Length: 182
Image (cartoon, rainbow, N blue to C red; front, side, top):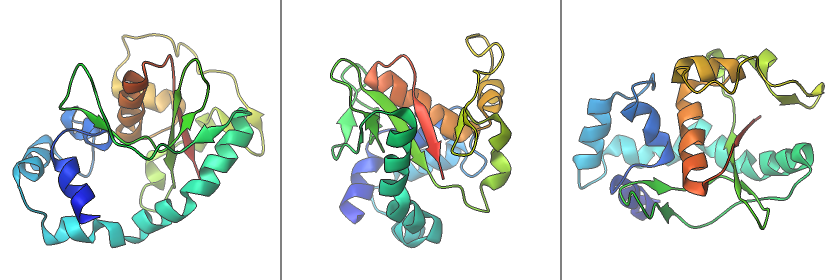
């Protein structure tokens, strides 16, 4: 975990995108820059892996991938490698899951909603729920001139996860992506 955390310092990953774009309620751009400039891990950074939400996410990720695969009726796999963008080598990506289609990988970001983060979701806007199935796309979802905040709100997801999914879409050169939330 320590070696992995040090590797992540050497570039911008999907979870960093929201701070870069100013839509992360937990980390500012200046804090992100300070974090990336440090060559050693702080006590706080070392402790991240032991946080309850992080452990819960790691433990539940296989279950969420299984449920996403069932909902999408496609195989969803967990890539094990960290990827470096060929055009922008300072960008790195660890995919939680991708739809395993031989012609096009589709990112599937996996999230566990905690009580702390619940206020950032609007589950009534979810594209799919186990109880209701699939819903219609949000009105005007295809408009590209909407802000990050507006587009995230259309889907009922936190802007800091919306930007992460967008970066994954760019990495996979995919037409869309999914955020699967338990």
